[in-house]
Amino acid sequence: MPRYCLALDLVDDPASIAAYEDHHKQVWPEILESIRSSGITEMEIYRTGNRLVMVMETTPEFSFSDKAQADASNAIVQKWEALMSQFQKPLPWAQPGQKWLLMDPVFRLTEAGHSS
Image (cartoon, rainbow, N blue to C red; front, side, top):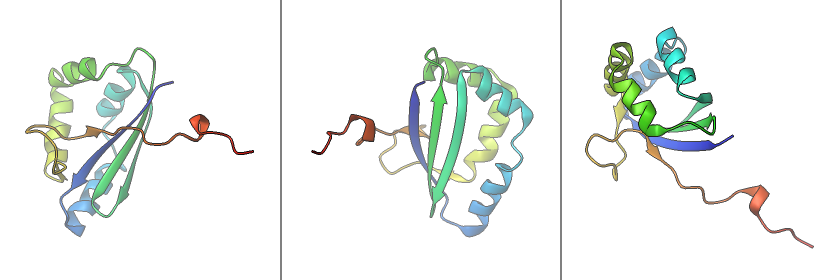
């Protein structure tokens, strides 16, 4: 299964970070359905300081552009995104309008050389 890592920052404020985490303890059912129906089979979000890293496992058919198109036409997803946007801050190198940025893999143990 394909795996993707994405990064995003949060507003660097303890109360804002706590509120963001609280919302993710009770993600709306419609959001969970939107994630699953797009071909995302697992999603985890990790935080250090105000930096977030999302790890996604998907079906081979998953498409970021198809997910974006479906999200754009889903009023509930748009409401969730607007709510989350108040806590999120784009990475310094993000283009205007970009939130989560795809990360490039740097190392994979399974592809590393074997020592003798």
